[in-house]
Amino acid sequence: MGKRALRAILAVVLSVSVLISIIPAAFAREPEVTPVVVISGMASMPLTLEGEKVWAPSANRIFTLVKKILVPTVELLISMDYGKFFNSTVKALSEFINPLECDDDGNSVYNVEHLEFPLSADNYREYYEDEKLTNEMAIVHSYADALGGKNVYFFNYDWRMSPLDHADDLKAFIDNVKAETGSSKVCLVACSMGGTVLLSYLEKYTADSVKNCVFASTAFQGTSVVGELFQKQVLFDADGLIERINQLGKNGVAQVIFPIVTGLLDKLGIMDFAVDLANGLVLDQLDAVYKNLIEVTFGHMPGIWALVADEYYAQAKSTLLDPVRNKRLIEKIDGYHDSVQVNAERIIAGAESLGCEVYIISQYGRQGLPVSPVSTSGNNDFLIDTVYSSGGAVAAGYGKTLPSGYKQANTACGHDHLSADRVVDASTCMRPERTWFIKDMAHIDFPYGSDASALLIWLSTGRGLDVFSSEKFPQFMKFNANSGKLTAVKG
Image (cartoon, rainbow, N blue to C red; front, side, top):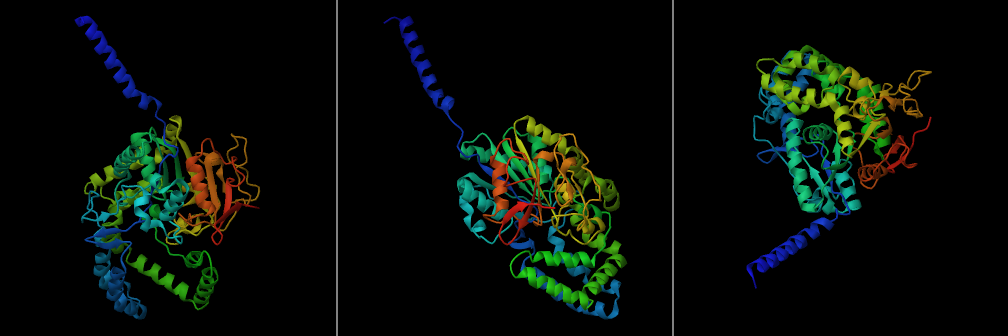
């Protein structure tokens, strides 16, 4: 056989080998189920230092604090000497929150750790197989049942740090999920503070790897409570406190017991006394409280700064931060605020242009934290203002309706986006036809097996959905915490 013929045969054999090797890739199909990554909110999992829970604090840490401040508290009730009380308790209070401390640059002072879940949910059943859970773990449980635990992942992070840094970690996490599942895309479900992480990820890495994303009760546009507190606008409200305690008893016998107890305490004047005492203490010792407790912990956390709504941001910076001493911290928080938070609409539009379906769930009808003016009086989901979690809805104040004769602000789409109870006008949202509202459902309260969890699953797995796509899930729904059912809001 001649050399030319031999070379020809070898070339044919090589070509066939290459062809055979690429056939599987050419005909490979995406997995039938797109994996879902649930992004946690703030403090859904504990931060620990040397094995002890520091936030949410362990029972031992709480008991130790109570022991140290018990006597000064009794003395305060007798003398009403706020200065003496603060001086007697500031060391104990500092020790209590000290493990969370960040330095002037926004870096953790101590080696605080957070739980990580690099594998699929099948590997962490002990964390979520409790049917009484209503937080992120309940969401993971519902997804594991619906899609199979091997297709569900949970991304957790140290909420004190910048969402822009978490975006880098989320990118690596998603790459790992894709490698493990063989999927080219994932669906992202962000909870609470996780909205800041999701938005940061979309800004830094685009939605090339994202099929659907859902913002569920998220602070992607900030909150009023952090904005006001960072401006030192502290004001405790007795009626708001009573309402909030009552709403903690959201189902079962607690719905009856809590209002009875708070009603009795209110009639005895105890609620007013407690709130007056708190207001007196904070107002009398405001600067000392901020200097010794707030500024060195929460005020130095880039992650908490991401929860300051735009309208409060500039004033909050000038109130709490020194432009020289906190220069690097300011660079970090400006990086998120200027490139991500205020550009949310552009970022969402960019994700949609790449074929990513973006859906938003907001809540209303719950009492916000009664520690500052707007947080107390505005419509809320217990922690986040409706206007911010929805991306711009007009909402009446808590317990109120929009003015008589109010007309929908934006009529460009030709659809009705005014709630039947005349509390929310969704027409002004970033995505009025892809934003759902749930009345009377607390923050991240998506109980396992409930209609609320079914709504999440429907949005994260569906395509081309809007608020008119399903009779079961209209734009405005009311949640029953006892049954887990969603029904249309009625006038």
